[in-house]
Amino acid sequence: MKQSLGLLEVSGLALAISCADVMAKAASITLVGLEKTNGSGWMMLKIIGDVASVQAAISTGASFAELRDGLVAHRVISRPGEGILSHSVMTEPEPAPEPTPAVAEEEVTVENVLSEAPQNAELISCNLCLDPACSRQKGEPRSLCLHSGKRGEE
Image (cartoon, rainbow, N blue to C red; front, side, top):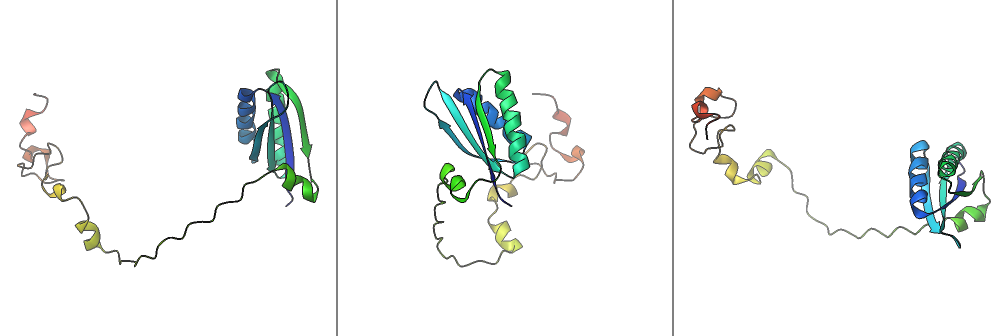
């Protein structure tokens, strides 16, 4: 599916960011540029996506900016020429992923996972009082806890 290009020019950075937020929430688009234009603090938003999404986003962003008296211009180019989209949208090439060192894969077993668990977990048996001297085990009745009669007393 061919991408379309949407341009929205507004007055001010705060309004530009607000319009970008409203447009992204209104339709499935990709914001590819937010740049300062020459004069009066105007900002240009560039979005791409399918034709219907870009039209919906631009109309939403334009009406939002117009309500705040900051709309300068807006335009949707439904099917831009071959060179237009690539020149107007300057995408940075993705950096090549760094090679990861080869590590011998170790078989994951229950014993390996349990051996890597913190060793202080064995000291605490009661999950109510967290006292290592308490003989109550997790899941047993609360009345077996050493501190069961002392609840609420400090």
